[in-house]
Amino acid sequence: MEPIIEVKNLSKKYGKLLVLENINFDIYRGEILCIVGGSGCGKSTLLRQIIGLESPTTGEIYVDGELYFPSNAKVQERIMKKFGVMFQLGGLLASMTLEENIELPLKTYTSLSSNEIKEIIKIKLDAVGLDGFQDYLPSEISGGMKKRAALARAMALDPEILFFDEPSSGLDPITSAALDNLIIELNKSLGTTMIIVTHDLASIYNVAHRIVMLDKSIKGVLAIGTPEEMKNSSNELIYNFFNRKFN
Amino acid sequence: MKTSINNIVKFEIVDQTLIISIFGEVTNLYANKYNLKPILSKTFENISKIKIDFSGVAKYDTFIFLLLKNIKSFAIQHQISIELTGMSVDLKNFVNYLENIKLTDKYTAPKKPNLSIRFFENAGKITIKLAIDFVSLLSLIGDIIRSSLKLLYSIRSIRWSDFPEQFTLIGVNALPISLLIVFLIGLITGYQGALQLKEFGADIFIADLISISITRELGPLMVAIIVAGRSGSAFTAEIGTMKVSEEIDALKVMGFNIVDFLVMPRLIAILLAMPMLVILADLVGVLGGLFASLTTLDLTSVAYFNRMQIALGINDVASGLIKSCIFGLVIVVIGCFRGFQVSGGAESVGRYTTSSVVTSIFNIILLDALFTLLFPIIGL
Image 1 (tube, each protein chain N blue to C red):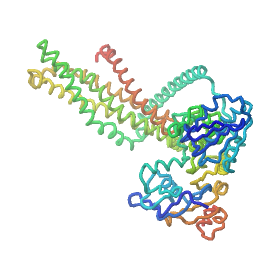
Image 2: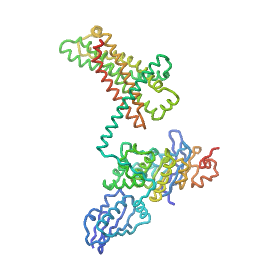
Image 3: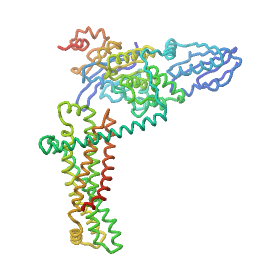
Image 4: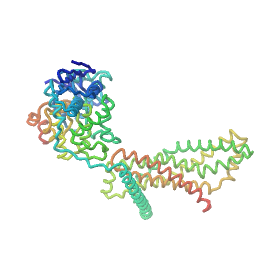
């Protein structure tokens, strides 16, 4: 399998506080990778480094074999267009309708005509089950629908890689399961690589092909493996996490 | 045989078959390069088949689906059969998926009423909201009155520990800016007045002009506007944030009276701070006027103060101080009321904070106009 993102020797410090130390792992093309770990272990920090919202203190990140970090702003901007991100709270612009939200990147970065943009918006909203909500404001739809709309916007430019920050936080089990299902469906039919930061066990078992587990004690990767391997791990920490136990 | 290359789409006609070959990156980034209009706008009488060759496609996204859809609808319109060649398995799956997205859990959008209906709907909603706002404002004022009466019976009914901090925030911290602004206002009034009075040779009346306008109007008004901007906004933002983060609900559940707990300390602090601010502001305002008259008129400071003693009565200063207390009351009531109105998220806090400052300043000026008319009647 060919890696689409390679993280090499990544460390992150905030001032003197070391959050991530010497992280190494690959993300393969077309897989659903879950980044998990206890609260405060640096999951979201790691995600922000990979996306490029923050710069790692040291280390390298390659995307599609190309050096993403460290590199100049122009290269980063170009590579960043391969990414789509669904933020924890959606990140939808509250003053714009769903249509305008999805239209924004399409209008700015593509040479599509306005008719074609309308059609693409329809396809994207249809893909997340929200066709017909074009004229709705984010405040007029429910939490689960907001997440879906955020996903539609993340997919607007047909990114090769989709990042999810806690997709199931704040959702009930049914809505959350439906969202998992949607993620699996999109991954299967579009072949998009997906990186999901979560600690929702049910969701992890549902969607993950592979799991990267971080831990506070070593400020880095504790284990990488399939859900099955994790669940039957001989390491107590990993076993407890994936079996919802504490000693 | 006829061939035309339109950027990276190639058209060919071979034995009544239109062959469209597509090359390169068929992505929405380069959508304008794949322009099919010139060829599809022609009518082909002698064509019975369209063959699309995808073997040159290097990269694709949703845009290729739109392209294909356009050609297909053209073919259907002209009753021409269509053949797709050179599609990779991935591309076939991709197009297939987009063609019939079938989600089991789709949301159906309730239809939004049209614009004219929505206009009346909104008008109705706003009217109802205004009425509800008015009633809840009255009920807050009622609560404040009740809490004040309760205070007469038991001095410890409100949260005094909040009072020193509020007094510092409202009064002490606002002092430098209030003094500076009222000094400048005194200076400006002094200069403008001096120019006019000089024409009449009535130089000495500058003392009347400054002392009365500063103590009666400008001092209390300026201080009230500053405090509304500084502290009124802070009341709303603070209480609004507490409401958003459910702190208000938590306090209620613990059995605290919200008005006693949050509003009363602020109210008492502002009632105490406002007159103090105003009296100091009056002082520097008069000094500002003195500075202006000394530099522009033939006047000594002794003459200025002597004249001021004659011109200025206790009722002028008192009316300013009474006003300042009432302005303070307005700032607290509106600031806290807007804070309690906050609902939802952070963006609501911002909206109500703006509205709090605007409403307080508007009401302060309105009341000031009213007092100007009423005070002479009651002899102030």
